[in-house]
Image (cartoon, rainbow, N blue to C red; front, side):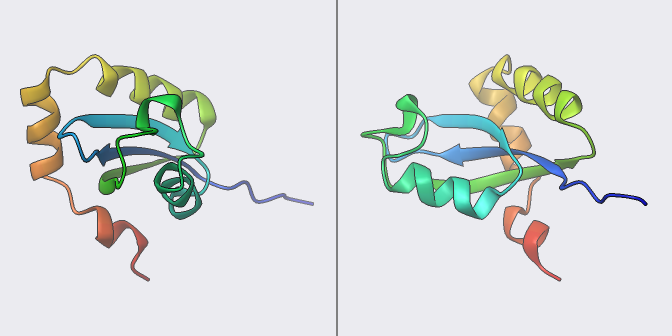
Length: 94
């Protein structure tokens, strides 16, 4: 019997104070709602509303966590280039 695992996502949010927040999850839409409600990461509380601006998909949690760390090390200019080349909404189209 094969079990299907949920994919892991790395996401970037644009916060209301013009900063970026990067995280990982198995459910991006739920996680963005949590951030907007003030129930997400401590960093995003008080920086709402947030906007989803980038999403990447991974097969393993470790790969997602590695990419999250990599993006968090980016300079602001690198994050802006990543976001400019992204289509976060397309990641959820079927």
